[in-house]
Image 1 (cartoon, one colour):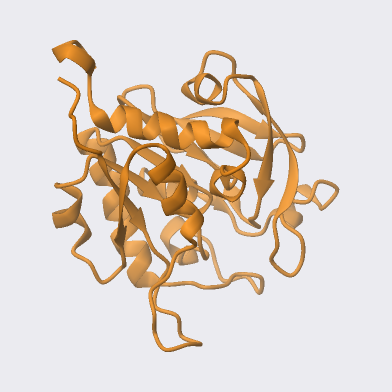
Image 2 (spheres, one colour):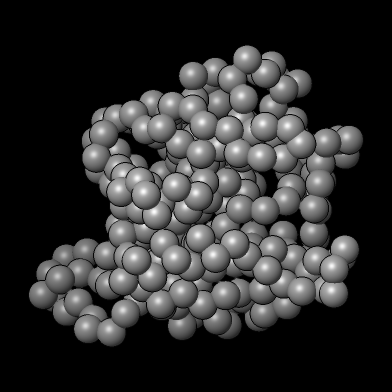
Length: 243
């Protein structure tokens, strides 16, 4: 049966802010999108026992943020890497594996798609301009969002969620998926070939996007629809039928 209470959706937060008073934080746009979708957001800072909390969640958003520790995917340091937080990485890599193992509905956003890919054995491009140039901007220097189109595989969960095979998206990243992990499938790309979406067919609802749907979800129903689809999946199957 579909549950009557609002599904509880975990949102991973940024690491402790070293430049401020040590706060954990996350843009409110993530929580706002979950609330509009009918979910109840709960923040998961890196200090949390994430796996213990995950067992009580109905769904999860692996959010954006800084770069992964490069050694976690066999790379070396790059001068453009920033906000590296080994503690956050460890917790979120474990969460990603939990999502796969326990079939927890999950939306992975920006850093989240990278966490998912690395957790399952894939790797990353450490700095996109070194690989694909900068004719198509994936962020505006020093670190602001850029906007561009992506192509989406027809019939994919992502295409069904956003109701189309193209989308105009808010992009804010300098790294991206390189070698795709086993079990994941590319379902969206930017015009320069950069991977913009991954799915796992052997999972009830696991969608990962390289862009930031939360930035435009308040006024773009197609981006809000990603959060709507996550929360709907988190409610579980209707009427006791198959998932």
